[in-house]
Length: 73
Image (cartoon, rainbow, N blue to C red; front, side, top):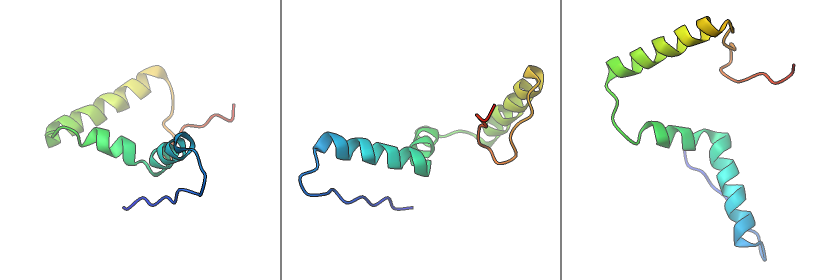
C-alpha cells in the first residue's frame, strides 16, 4: 500500500515530518514494518496469539471485536 504525501509550499520540514509520521501510524505501516523486521516462524506467531488471548482472559477483559481499544469509559 503506497503512502503519498505532498509537502506544501513554505511548510517547515519538521511539520511535514510530523505529518508523515502521523500518516504512517494511521495506516498501520509502522507496526507492520516492526513486525516484519525479523522472520517469525508460524508456530511462534500462533504461540504469541495464544499467550495474548490467555493474558486477556486472565486480566478479565473482553477483547474488542474490531481490534481497537475503546476509551469511551
